[in-house]
Image (cartoon, rainbow, N blue to C red; front, side):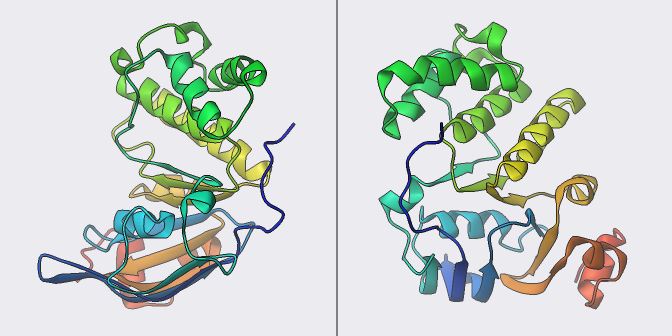
Length: 245
């Protein structure tokens, strides 16, 4: 039984003239972007392109210096953020047990107490963490912590899942477990937006690619087109593993 959400969907996402400045530098520079429901979207680009920063702007965690972000025609606000989930590269976990981390998130999303325990157990099992339910979350390995963070996000059944380098520096087994959760979320109808530096992962998961360069969208294409025949010289260099200037 899915969690109740508003009748109006969050998508399309529309970004118009987005600018973010900090420390005298323009880190996001007049960025325009439109994402529809459906395809799993990978955001790629060289270091410093603004990928992680863009996710935070989309989620409404920070305010832009100029421009506009709208979800289904509405500006980001708390009610809309509760219908999304953002998982950071370094998991943010509460000082409580593994299972209690999930139950707390479910309670924050209005799930009644009777359902929380069962949902938490279900998602821990799906993430391969059921045997660790009673362990303090912060003593888990890095891979286990990230699997918990992804499972906690998905337990709340977001319409949009934003992932910032979810498998960076993880062991292969944990990375594979997280990719399985991502595929299952996509199959269930969740819009997934994935920032990754791992081109192999983008090949495996992405259906659409947004390539950023210096805070702007350099290319936005179907994944196969981007990887096989990128349109821009910078994208061709990036796919080939060359320095992007």
